[in-house]
Length: 241
Image 1 (cartoon, one colour):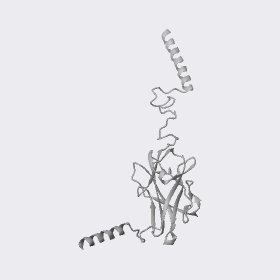
Image 2 (cartoon, helix red, strand yellow):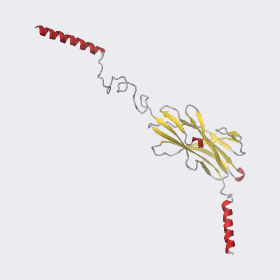
Image 3 (cartoon, one colour):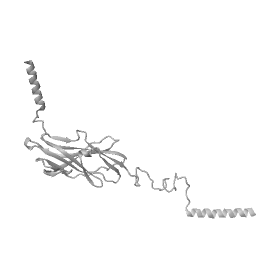
Image 4 (cartoon, rainbow, N blue to C red):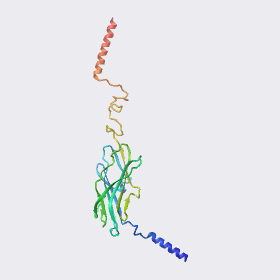
């Protein structure tokens, strides 16, 4: 009898572990996301492809911006599922610095399926939706003054009914791309180096550190010549007397 009860308990436990819980199941979700990066042109990256990408090297005055975000969602309205809002979150920081907090930008509802997503995929699910509308223009180079390698870190969030909130974030690790940055000094040179030959020892040799003395102006040279002639004439007269 005891053995029978133990087997019954184990069977019920196994059933409960594998049986879908109607109350716990998600009735909507996020199935694909994108971010648009603009340099000399605009490029859409699926979040998984954005991860680990080096976007290039940039200087002060160059263009590197986040100019779009897209979330693709599904829902089961028959079970009370619905999506009510969608967002992209980002932060930009030097790898040598502590990461700041995230900034969130809302992506508004765009359309119901059928449609093409930002990656060119045909989306045909009966209750699939695209969320990509709304302004987004984040200058990734704004305010940067320190040379180094920077991270652009993003994740996506949406709200709805049953459940109230979901994240698309590489299982909490977020999606991170990098870029290299070199600031320009007031003369337009990298990292504050002059290098323009204006007399600092790196140019025409007319300044400090060049190993050459200062070259007199033409008028000064003329005065020195006249003085030399007068001096010689005076010494000759003194010698004759």
